[in-house]
Length: 250
Image (cartoon, rainbow, N blue to C red; front, side, top):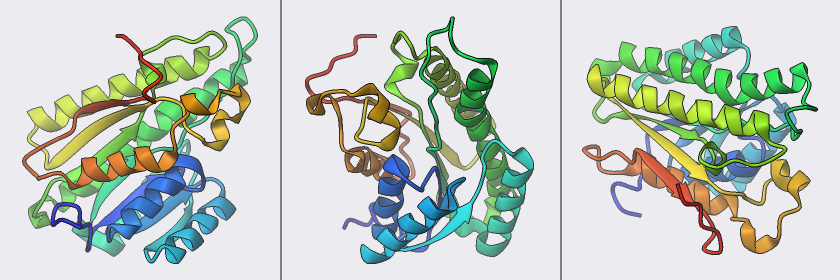
């Protein structure tokens, strides 16, 4: 492990850490030395991730968190920064959901739920994280990191995924706004947008895609680790990951 890859002494929050990419990312960061706070609305899933982190030789703790509840998010980060201080310097906005339906068929509840998790959630967590980072700015030796797991769906269009496509496009724009704000205000923070294509995760089961069009979550988790361990003078702003058999012109 190189010096830059080493996350020893750092604390990371991974939302949606109870399954899929969130679980893979929690394991990836923990085995790099980070103490991971595995946040998920599914407490059992978060605990299972913690068990798998321990089996891999890492350290983590499970936190039940609904990212759509701004009050709960604020309370969680207040407590986390009180406990960990400036060591808490990494946020992975990974929690996401999908309610596949054509625009003529999608219900108000489905639309609102997708936006609540995929857009409002990352806004609440990023806001609370940034406030905590700024309070401890003088204690930081390196920039803090926010990585938002967006999606290739922010850049493409698919029938039957209007809520998901739209929410991910909104999340990408929110991430770009954060990048601009931290730069213009000289905040000690790097912000990265990852846009992966389909992965072997529970959320993708409904689409029945062929195996060659799916990536392993561990591959994307490896890029999350790269983004948060780059030389402090460098930032990975945006990345698109697809299987080699796929190509998404923009």
